[in-house]
Amino acid sequence: MASSATAPNSLSFFSSSLFLSSSHQIPKTYISVAKFGSGRVSKPLSVASQLATLPIISFEGEKVGETYLDLKTAPEDTARAVVHRAIVTDLQNKRRGTASTLTRGEVRGGGIKPYAQKKTGNARRGSQRTPLRPGGGVVFGPKPRDWSIKINRKEKKLAISTAISSAATSEGAIVVEEFGDKFEKPKTKDFLAAMKRWGLDPKEKAMFLMIDVEEIVAKSSRNIGTLRMLTPRTLNLFDILNSDKLVLTPAAVEFLNARYGVDALETEEDDEDDDEDSTEG
Image (cartoon, rainbow, N blue to C red):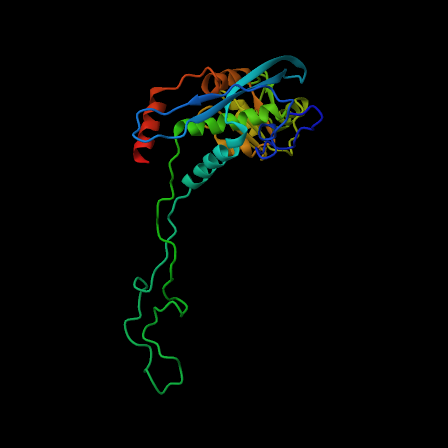
C-alpha cells in the first residue's frame, strides 16, 4: 500500500491494497501449486504470500505490542476472480430453490368451455386456465430446482485468506487482547464503551473473530446490529467482505496463520476433494 494513501472505510476487496499496483508494497513470494491425479492438464493455482503487521491493543485501549499475519493470497491479476467466484458460490448455495408456480395444466378448474365460440362478441376462449386470464396458469414460471454450485476447497480457503490479508494490509484489522473475562455482567453499554476505547465506531460494521465466545460477551454484543461475533467454525467470506473493521484476538491470529498461512499444511481431505472436482469436471 502506498505510504501517501489513506485507509479505506471498508474492507471491500475492490478498494483494498491487495488489488492495487504499487512499488511500495511488501514483496511477495509466488508459489505454483499444480494438481495431480487428473487426466487433463489444468492451469496451476498461483499462490502468493503477504506479510501484514497488526497492532495489539489492551482492553483499556492502549497499544501493548504487535503481531503479524502471513497468509496465502491470490496474485493481483487473479485475486478479484478468486474472491468473486467464492462469494457467488456462497450466496448461490444459500438459495433454497423452493419457488414454484402452476402451469395451465396444473391449475384447478377450466374443464369446460366458458362460453360459446361465436355470437357473443367476445374473443374465443376454450379454458379458464389460460395464462391470459387472472387465476390461470403461469408461462415459464419458476419451478423447484437446485441452485448449488461446486468450488474446490483449496480455492475457497484461498479466497478467505485473500480477503483477510486484504483487510490486514489496508489497516482494516486490529488485534485485541483476550477480553472474555473483563466484563462483570452482560451489558451492552459496557461493550460499546470498550469498542470506543479500541477505536471502533459502533455505527460501522465490525466483525470479531474469537476462538471461543464467552456467554457474557455474546449477551453484551448481541444487541449491536452492526457487529458480527464469529468463531473459526462460523468464519465465512461474506461477513469478512461486508465488514468495515476486522477485530481479532491473539488466539485467532495463531489460528489464521496455522490454517491459512504460508506454512499451513494441506489435509488429505483437501487433496481428495480437489481430485473429485477434477474428475467431475
